[in-house]
Image (cartoon, rainbow, N blue to C red; front, side, top):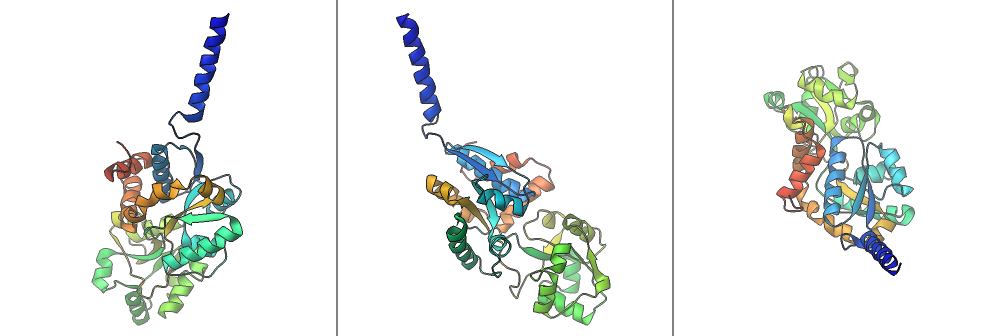
Length: 302
């Protein structure tokens, strides 16, 4: 009987030890949320792999719209996500847009920490801002490299170029109306084609339009031979990416900011376009592309 008791105690003791620390770090659980497009899936997977390397137990909650994801973060259903400072400042907080990413990041952080207990960290150079795109060969033919060049061409040849835009960009002050005011030009109504965001790339590729609205880090820009027209008057606000987490998460796991620190320099708009390209055009899995990126930069073991 005594032997049985000792065995039971030993088993229980082993289970307790296992539960308290299998990896030596104790229980470190975190839920990462993401929106519904490739870049967000990549951010979530990169974060998951980095945190798992450091002993975290990570759950991913994907395919949330901006509003749903923000609510999940505020309600602590999600502990951490990657979002964009322009979205945070303008959409979530109702503040005026800012073109300087560092200033936008600092303003956003000040307000969000005090009002909503959300901390933003690890600002990087991935700027998922709006962009006006043209087919590169067509842009070169017309000598258009900047939005100022585009404005000059439209003013001199008002019926010459057509544009594809989504409904949101067509109506927002920081969209087409604002661009036209800032750069002093206007597409004729008959030359504006409104469609879903994904279709703008296809319409431009298929030469159904001459200019299209897109997002600067989309992998299709390179794949389809497009060029982003330079916003030479810095009209579009900063949509640089940063990690956003609850204050509770930030205080419980202050090491997260340091774990993500290498991404501050490694992630740029160009790098993200390449990663998006691998998923969207080469049809590789998000997990495979994220893992290859981290292994290639010596951030996780192969």
